[in-house]
Amino acid sequence: MIRATSIVRRDAVDSDRIVDIITLEHGDRHRRRILLNADGGTAFLLDLDRADVLEDGDAIRLDSGWLVEVKAATEKLIEASTEDPLDLLTLAWHIGNRHVPAEISREAIYIAYDHVLLKMLHGLGAKTEIVQRPFRPVRGAYHQHEHGGHSGHHHGHGHG
Image 1: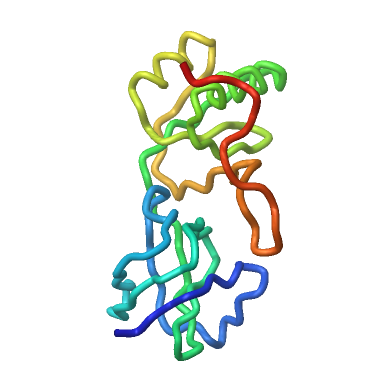
Image 2: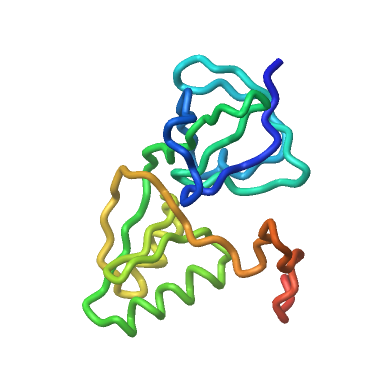
């Protein structure tokens, strides 16, 4: 079985080394150890030291040195926007308070489709649209990087 034990971040990917592409939804891009089948048929065991997030454009290094590029799959998302940037910040606070992964742009916030959150966003005055597109949420502030960083869940409030 082909093994893969490291991730190459998108800014360091050598496109000449890519032999296949794997398309994954957001929930499937946080992994440590799993058998995967790339879009072109390459089967391999992802076997990382610790769970990590495979971002759109990253690559998985196979034990042969070849790379499998990671693509974010198209998903059903809620696009929430407002006329006032301060209102958009307020939406971001409410979404973050619910620990929901979110992709944030200057014009909108994107979250995975959820009818309860859609109702909440409407109640907060957001303009919403259901869209189909890749989901690239912001990585958490406590995400552990290859060169140190923090881990755990320590941000000064309870979860009661």
